[in-house]
Image (spheres, rainbow, N blue to C red):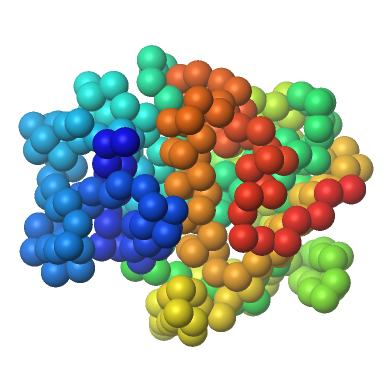
Amino acid sequence: MNAIVVYGATGHTGRFVVEELLRQNLPVAVSGRNASALAERWGHLDVRPAAVDDPHALDRALQNAAAVINTAGPFATTAGPLIAAAARQRIPYVDVAAEIEANAATLARRSDTPVVPAMAFYGGLGDLLTTAALGERTAADEVHVAYGLSSWHPTPGTRVAGKVSHQRRNGRRVRYADGRLRYHDDEPVQQDWAFPKPLGRRRVIAEFSMADIVTIPSHLTVPEVRTYMTVEAAGDLADADTPAPAAVDEQGRSDQTFVVDVLADGRHATASGQDIYAITAPLAVGAVRRILAGETRASGVASAGAMFDAVDFLKDLPLTLELS
C-alpha cells in the first residue's frame, strides 16, 4: 500500500492520527506547512512539507499517496485546497473538521473520489451513533445528541477554529430546524439531561450546536437536530485561561472522559470513553482503512453514517457502546 498522508501532522490531533496509523501498521507520510517542525517531530517518517495555498506543493505531497487525512484547521481554509489536491491525485480525502459551515460546504460538493468530512468526535461519532440507533430507518422526527464531557481543555487549533466560526456568523448562534441551518441571537438556555450512569443527571446548554447538525441531516431525513453540552465543559471552552490538554498516560491521552448520548425518535445510542481528541484518531484512520478496503456504502462526498456500516464501525472503536 502507498503511504497515507496526514496533513497537519505536528498538531495535537494530527499526532494522535499518525500514531494510530503506525499502531495499525499502515504506511504513513506527514505533511504540513512547517518543514522544520515536521522534521523535528517525524524525521524518521516520509516528510512532505506543503503550504495549503501552494497547489503545486500539495500535488507533490500527495503524489503516489493512498489517501490523505486532513487534521489542520481552520478547515474553512484548508479543506477546499486539500480536497482539490486529492481530486487531482484521484485519492480519498478524510478530515476531522468540527466547523459547522466548513462541513456544510464540503458536504455540498460533488466528487468522483471518496470525501468524508468531520470524521471525528464532533460530527462523525454522533452521526454514527444516530445511524446505528435508527437501524434500517432513514428518517426521524428529531434527533438529540448530548455531550457529557468531564472537562474541555481545548487545543490551540480548537480555539482558532472557534474564532473563525464566530467571525463567519458575526457572533450569532446557529441551530438546525425546519430542515435547514438557522442563525439567531437568542441567549443560551440551560436544562437537565439524564445521562446514563455513572454520569447521571447533569446541567447542559441546549442548542450548543456542533457539526452533527450538518452531518446527520446530510443523509437522514430529519427536520430538527439538536446538540447539547455539559455546562462545565462549555465553561472551560469559554475561559481563555483554560490550558491545553495534558497527557496522563502512555498513549498521550488527557484525563478527560466523555459520554455521547443520542436520542432519535425514542431510540437510544450511547458511547463513552476517554479524551475527545484521542478518539478522533481511530475514527479518521478507520474511515481511510475501510475506504481503501472497499468497505463503503456510498460514493463521492458522504458523512460517516452514510459511508459506513455504523454498528460495525462503532464496535471497532476503543469505547463503550450501548444501543437500545
